[in-house]
Length: 63
Ligand SMILES: [Zn+2]
Image (tube, rainbow, N blue to C red; front, side):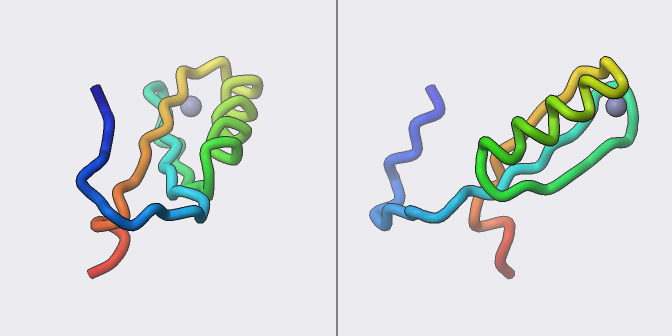
């Protein structure tokens, strides 16, 4: 149910993601989903923590 069709401009650039950990204060920004997944997998492999990646809306990135 997370379809964003209100925006008319189709952004072809990588989306901004924020990778956070539920078990510690780990937090990391990433460009693109693959990057975020890689960072999350890396942290999970090191700590066995559950990592969640949030997609950051473009409206939050600019003032
Ligand atoms: Zn962690």
